[in-house]
Image (cartoon, rainbow, N blue to C red; front, side):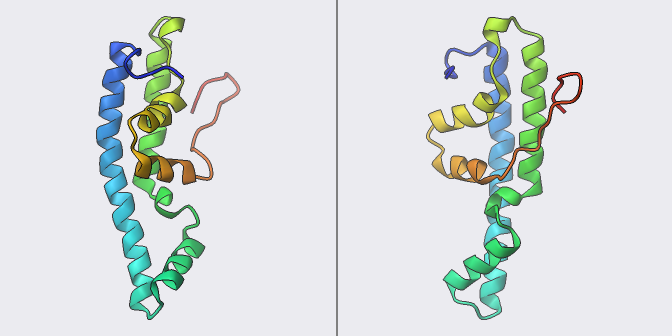
Length: 131
């Protein structure tokens, strides 16, 4: 896997920007998740049962946060656009920028949330363009 240190200046700058938005969206995701669990506890469930009840409504846990999904989709498309403007040997697969480099930095909590997503909100159209 391409390392962050070996990436182009543009990809490193995009990653720094992505991390800022990701950090904010992770805070939102964790806060929303804690509120969901706490709501069940406030209804009288013990902590384990409250966690189970929260997962029954939001099976992806914190990964179900709309802000987090927006960040992933937005930065996947930004990475794809940047890749079209650089030489083939400078291209970085979006999944490397969005997840691989987060793993390389040891952001284990973030990796756990990102890998809990049942799917990433991306697809390829008939013209082989991400969208």
